[in-house]
Length: 159
Image (cartoon, rainbow, N blue to C red; front, side):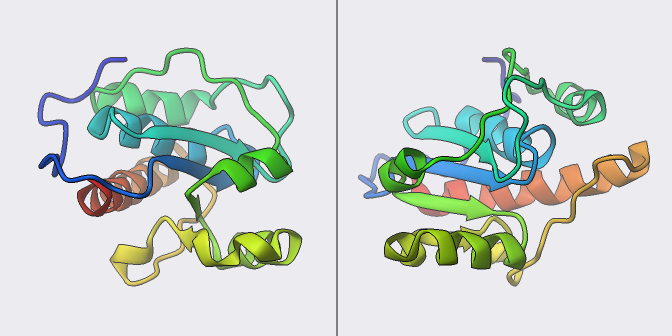
């Protein structure tokens, strides 16, 4: 996987209890795979996966989302959308979501995992990251900036 020249972020050799990170959005074709790719590049020692609450299995990453990744120096190695399942949530040490509604839904569906379900934008004042799907290239660019920054802030804390 190709990454930006300035990665990784915050790697200092400390051991973290959060090794398996699951990033979740609705369709698993824009936001969550972008965050997955960014976080995996910046923290190769972590296992970062992504899934969607309503994903259509096998769909590739949205072309505009992929364009943002490529323009920023990241490489999509053939992402394919995955529908979230019990095992993924159970196996994750941390589940990151884009919106409060997604957090609430997952907490309802997986009450035993409630304590590990957080916003990707937590370290940006609990910012929700809105879905750019079906919107303009400018909307994707704006969301990408949020995803990249939020991902970097999580990596700084996890590594």
